[in-house]
Amino acid sequence: MTTIISTPVDLLDESTAVGQIILQSEIYIDYKHARAQLKEDEEARDLINSFAEWKDKYDDVQRFGKYHPDYKTISKQVRVVKREMDLQKSVAAYKKAEKELEQLLNEICAEIAGVVSPTIKVPTGNPYFDNSSCGSGGCGSGGSCGCS
Image (cartoon, rainbow, N blue to C red):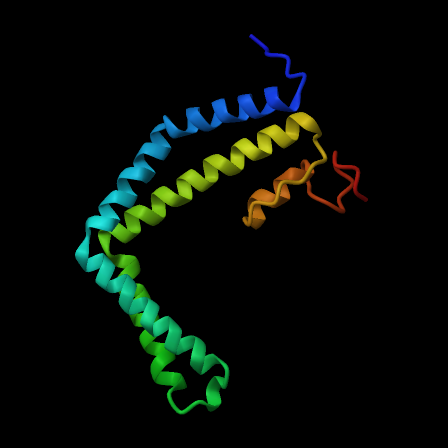
């Protein structure tokens, strides 16, 4: 059944309904669970806080680059701490769930934009996904997007 949307209020109501469907999706529920697990994981919190501290030091060192006396030490340590954090089970699960939710939202946005017009580009932050908005072959290839 197709609903006719005749006013901006109708459009907002429909977008709220889509939002509610997303909130009930398995992907969102997995994301919410992973986020809760991450918040409960004391070791992960410690690693995240440690990474944030080292990241601040790294940002300070970056102002001077390789000329800063602690550049190599801090640059190496921030990578070590980030790797430790990324390998933590709850952090990895959260990042995976977050990426899957982002992908779902990007696909929904692209689908809506495609219904409006096949030439609308939807910025997603993902270069592989962004290129697909231009039809087969991408811009400059004379494909269906009309670019030549």
